[in-house]
Picture 1 (cartoon, rainbow, N blue to C red):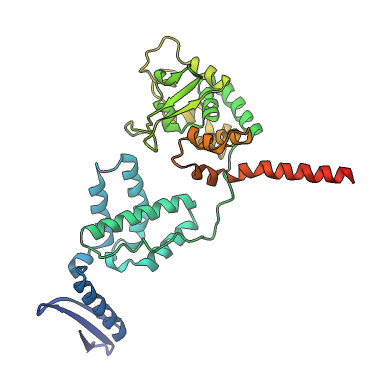
Picture 2 (cartoon, rainbow, N blue to C red):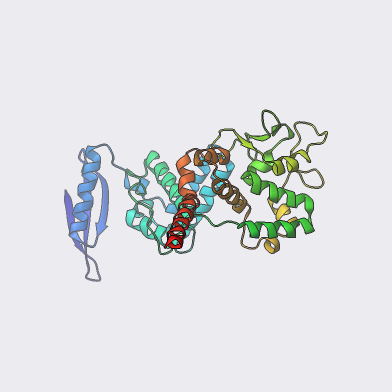
Amino acid sequence: MSVERRQTRGGSVRYVARVKNAGHHVAARTFGRKADAEAWAREQYRALAFGEFIPPARSAAAFADVVAGFVESRRGQVSPHTWRTDSDNLASAVAAWGSRRLSSVGASEILTYLTDQLAIKARSTVQRSRTSLSALFAYAVREKMLSRNPVIGVRLPPGRHQESEGVDTFSDAELADVLARQYQRNPGMAQVTEFLSLTGLRWSELRALRVADLRIAPFPSLRVVRAQSDGYAEKGTKTYRGRIVPLTARALELAAARVADRPASDYLFTSSSGAQLRGDVFRRTVKGRETAPGRTLHHLRHYAASHWLRSGVPVHQVATWLGHANPSTTLKVYAHVLGEAQDMAAIAHLNAVAADR
């Protein structure tokens, strides 16, 4: 190991660590502390011994340049939606570390970044940002720019703002009011809102439904096998597994009214002109900001799931209808709904005990 002490013209002291391999200098770096220079040199020799050594020129690439290469490499390898999500998530990281060397972004910087993000974004959004960061650094390891992925050892911190327990969605009265307002404005599109609240479908799944997906036997149901987000090509569902969603009498009435004598390949729900539904047009038509302020289409999915659970439908059945790959997801998201029955039973018992005194 070679660590050379140097003094600058300004009088400050610097330590230059040099690493040799087979008699040749392969790396050098300057530090303000001798201990740091020695620690860095030891790490380089350890990496050489285990075949993990990364030439400094490779790890010196600017973070922004590596992000650009990563995003371009993913084009065509992942779905367009995932590609855009990675691009959007990493844009904030580029703003934080754009000109820095890739190798200078370590676990502590990543933890600080995620903590700052939690102060201004939802936890689920920051979790997806962490996933994008991990994919980026995995790419850097694969391309021999780094020896390790620093994101792997960083857990998402609690953050200053904890998510409230359970999910926020419509109450029965609130949904009834929303539907009344939307039926006054545009009955056809209000039916779409009502249908989503009865079936728990994702918006992408609803707009990809075909007439042939409506089944009557052995019971009224929908076959959900595809999805199409606004602006993207059609693909499989989120879990890439089809499912059957039973229809209540009212849901069947809404769906059957859309069938008439239309071809099986036609979209089941369309605009008044017969075109495929578009989220922006739909929200503008029903004036969503006025009729359902603070709510999104996904809140209708939460409403359906909560209603099913409160009605006594087993959680594993609700998970199947929602298309959750794992029932534990349903348990985690809707635990508060499942606990309501126990709370109500306990209160009823306490009231009964009080009445007997």
